[in-house]
Image (cartoon, rainbow, N blue to C red):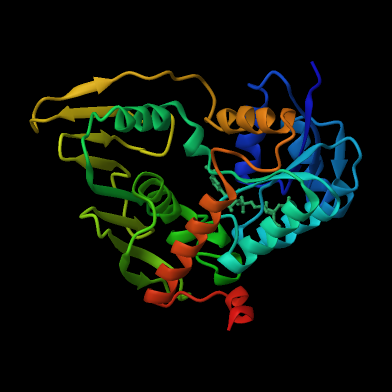
Length: 333
Ligand SMILES: NC(=O)c1ccc[n+]([C@@H]2O[C@H](COP(=O)([O-])OP(=O)(O)OC[C@H]3O[C@@H](n4cnc5c(N)ncnc54)[C@H](OP(=O)(O)O)[C@@H]3O)[C@@H](O)[C@H]2O)c1
């Protein structure tokens, strides 16, 4: 079987977890890693071996042995680094948040489409077994008509706090980092809201340290989302309809979650089993990317470009309401 040859751009925290999950995908091969510093790339490759070790991102995108690049830099740099890959005709799996704003996301998607090159946002939770189980239960009508959703994601960062968490220059704040999971979850089941309300408590750097968002839907559905770097929240989610409720226990976006189903009566709990395998859980999205590449697709039918653009639009709208500004927004004025 022909292996899909991966390159990793940026040797940070998530890059390591991703590299270890690549080992769980039988037709995946890590052929190249790249850091802005050769020493760091060499260090990374000691732990996650790759034959080609690059001391710059430019070297990686010129590497003829690489089929697809995983962009694992801070959100502020996804636009620049994804465009760099695409302009060298490399397929891209780009970490979330896909970009700083929808203008950047649109430019990235337009470039990929004009070259017919595969590009997907690494919204890995959408490929996890529990997410698919919840989706199936909803389609089977186990909740009835969806009426209400709640999702929260919060942790108090501990020292040494990564710079990107609060630095506006790196797209800091809860929304693009962890609030995106709440928004993605609600959007994927309820779609685009008709109205949005939001409040935030800023960090000293001006980005959101805590953010509360509400979505209103004309069909009667309501959703509440809370993200926080001020407190350790449950990081759980509820999806409720007029015939039942699903609660996803901590942490709702990870494969280690538990599904509790309450059919009808509030106290009639059923734990719903679903498949779990080892690793961090990033292998599921990798297998999906492989399927897409093997079929010659330029866009995933599961995490579509439309999904990404709508998510970015929602985050732009929320930021506008509460007043979170990044340098990249200046180009939009
Ligand atoms: N899917 C998930 O579960 C998950 C979890 C955590 C994070 N993420 C996402 O992954 C991305 C990276 O997060 P992370 O936690 O891995 O961050 P990180 O540990 O800070 O790593 C980011 C890497 O980006 C590179 N980089 C390039 N330009 C940079 C700059 N100006 N400042 C800082 N780093 C720069 C650096 O690699 P070199 O020095 O090697 O060039 C750095 O190690 C974020 O977009 C985040 O939202 C996703």
